[in-house]
Image (cartoon, rainbow, N blue to C red; front, side, top):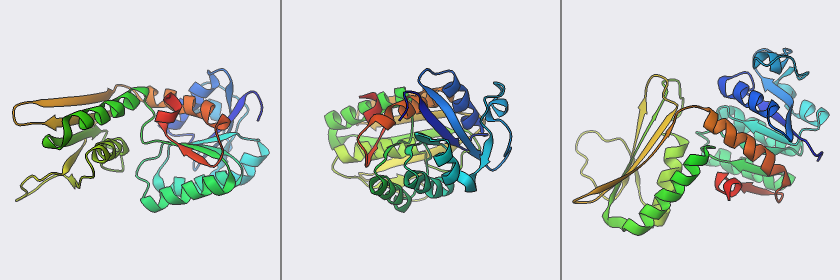
Length: 267
């Protein structure tokens, strides 16, 4: 690995992809080595991102393995959709490229296949439902609240995102629920409620979709005489971009064959 980390992106021409390109090109110690998308193939990704030519053309996704090897890429950043990530991540791992995955909505089978590819090909990966540094703290607070309040408090999670988000509930809401459930010894998840549904000891999870909401998450711990609310609100996608680039700089130097999450990056 060279002193400057070489990072590639899939979905490079999308809103998140172009933001990451701009951040990579303005961050010391890392640069853009390759870009992949279904559109704008052949165009310079710097021009697509609005920063002028950087000498990196957009490549077709089917050329992923060949281009990653030719460009000597160290890490592939993927914030696309589950179907695409499930295909691209194992290909990149087989090419010896480390991974930073922010795609949400991956099934258990897809996650297992990606993990197996990371182990088999001896690369490193960061897979996280949310790359915001603040969300990392939010998860820690959720864990502490569950640990200290115990099972006597009902837990409800409400998340809100823009009207174009494909998966629900959000990966961040699910991560928070899993963290809390683990502290409480295992809880059933209920997704919204309708009709006759008396509350048991489940964790309720609710999704709101509308407008251009970047990402709001609220966890409510509700007792008989009081409640505690933990809330994280993302004002801009830049919070996810910063964390993704931080992870991309971090992961190439880590132990191979291991899947990390954002808590490891921030430790």
